[in-house]
Every structure is written in C-alpha cells, then in structure tokens.
Length: 128
Image (cartoon, rainbow, N blue to C red; front, side, top):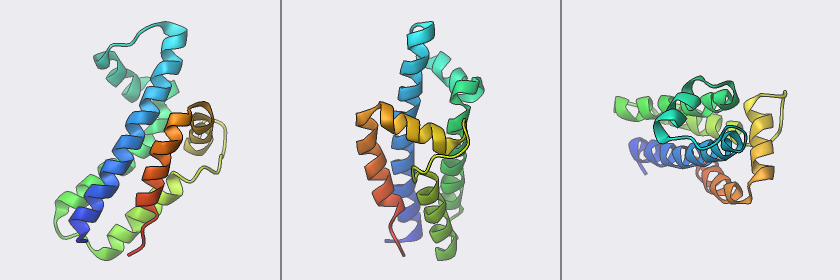
C-alpha cells in the first residue's frame, strides 16, 4: 500500500469516527436545546464549547489530508500520523474536558460508537 492510499484510508476512518462523535454530541445538545439543523450543527462544531473537544480529531484529519495531498510524504511521516491517530483514539481518559476524557464518556454512552471506534482503531494500529 502506498503512502497516499494509506493516508486516505486513515483519513476516512477518522472522518467516520468524527461524524459518529459529532452525532453523539448533537443528540446530547438536542436533548437540552431542541432540534439542530445541519447548518446550525456546523456552527456548533466550530464554535460551541460542548463540541470543542472534537477539534483535536478535526485538526488531525486536516493534517493527514494535507500530507496526503502533498504527494511527497515520506514513510516516516505516515508512521508518525498513524501513531498520532492511534494515541488520540486510545480511550485512556485524561483531564475533564480533554479529548481523552470526553471520548471515553462518549464510548460509554453510545454502544454504536464502539463499532466505529473499533474500525478506526484497527486502521490506526497498522504498522509499516
């Protein structure tokens, strides 16, 4: 598998995970504030404090996509991005409000998310 294909696969797995996490947060938000339209969800994802913890994952996806589009990404860079992804989505907790603690909480609250997590973890755990 070449570096471009590897990065594309990692990006897709993380985008699927990000989407699932955003839906978990959306449902929590809607329980308190009512239905959210898609355009409003985008605003929430980028600006609302309850969604801010997802930025770490969003930023990693952007970094992966930029490396993929570069066309001259080294194997060392691919390894580093895979390692970063694997570390980020390893449910180890952390400070309240951090990605790790919110991620663990989301996994405990939504059993469907566990399947998406497992798929992303499987991709991110690949070694080159």
